Length: 288
Image: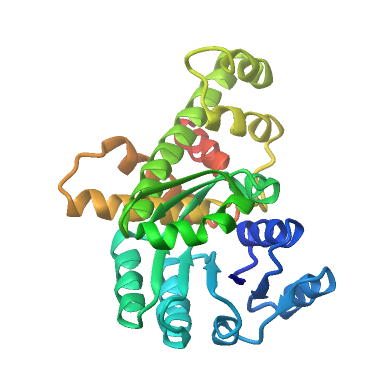
């Protein structure tokens, strides 16, 4: 089987790099021509469009920045060009309805769709250690699994279409809440005169520690919030999806909704490209 990869952003680049480095011989496409050329120089094959890529491979992987982009590219470009038996995979973080729309469109063409969102950040993408959460048929998952294993260290089949996306939203709910919790803890440390780096070391072996405390600690200590590879605009999108899902399912997700409000405040301050740990600055502004 042959594989193609669409989208060479912060996450997609590392994923495509691993496919190439580990012998998958990928075809790549993104809207920035220089990124395609750079991959070709390293041994990948290039495509002139999403539909051109589809014509060259059996499995199409995509990692895209927004819900609308996923719909535009996958439903609007990829699936119309696909043939029966092809496998289409969306690694983007979208809502459950979008994943099911993609699955229905693929099924109508005789193709198979997997919603396979990822977690681990750009570092995990580059290292090939991503968590990959998959929703789709057992047949499609089994066929695509060898490629997933080139990009991720923790690959799970969560169930039918939509289950992978649901799992990613569960993960993002905790990422959002824990990022805000870490920022509040560091704000308290600053106010009490506790060194943030020392606090982070202690928390790494205490019950209060978390992956987001560990991640945010050095960034917060250095106040290195600008131009991040994990920008708040992505988490603001994800938390907005969770907020809408909570409303639709009549769930009282109060911590998630409050966290979404804080990230959205960052967006309103034109801090969309700042690191998610920069939510500390909203807490500080409201504490003045």
